[in-house]
Image 1 (cartoon, rainbow, N blue to C red):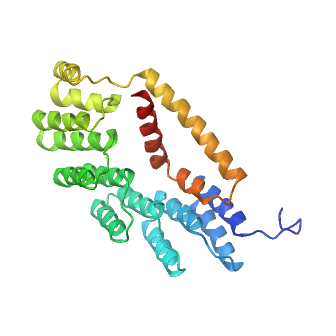
Image 2: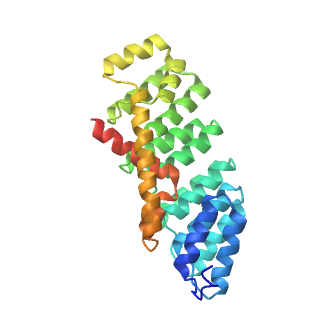
Image 3: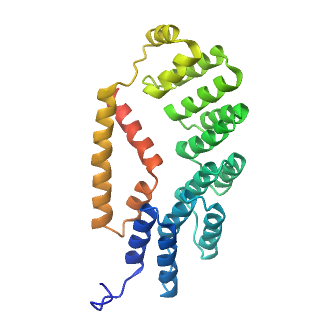
Length: 270
């Protein structure tokens, strides 16, 4: 319609379409529009590349996602945390935990310290392989680099640990670390994991000792409402200000957004 009206699409127009195709789970269409943009002599932005890489990764097309990342570099652009996060997620979905960790280390070498979400994705990949040393090592690494592991980090650590060694002592020790780190509100999933690990009665006593309250339905409802409002605001901002790449980067990775949202919610509840 823009062309029919004599309006020449610019890179922002193409990026918006590419992002929409990627979010709609249509990697082939995202690639097609990306190629059209390049054919028009328009340079691809990191945001456009990230959208295509994310779509390819979610579709299990890891090799193509890595090739697209290399093309990004060849165009003189610098991968950001979203780029690496999408590649790490693609590895994890294919069960390639070691490859996910390699990309995590590559981020650090490039001066992009991985965030909690990137660590969580890698931990989960190793957890599915029941590689307890790697999972616990990544948890320790987060603490060493002054990151604050969240409920997902500890849930993965406790679940993997108990599946491998069935140690109630280690499960309790990890839970105490979770609370000592300022996490005094585990979600229902972590609570169920702990009940299986140490027993429901003992877990109840442990919560009373540590002054821990399990997130209830009211908490989850408040988070869901905040999620809907924030997502709605984010989409509005993206539509009304398509040149603001920051908003696209913030909302293109759902896991990273939800992590930030829950952290904000926890802070308000304290």
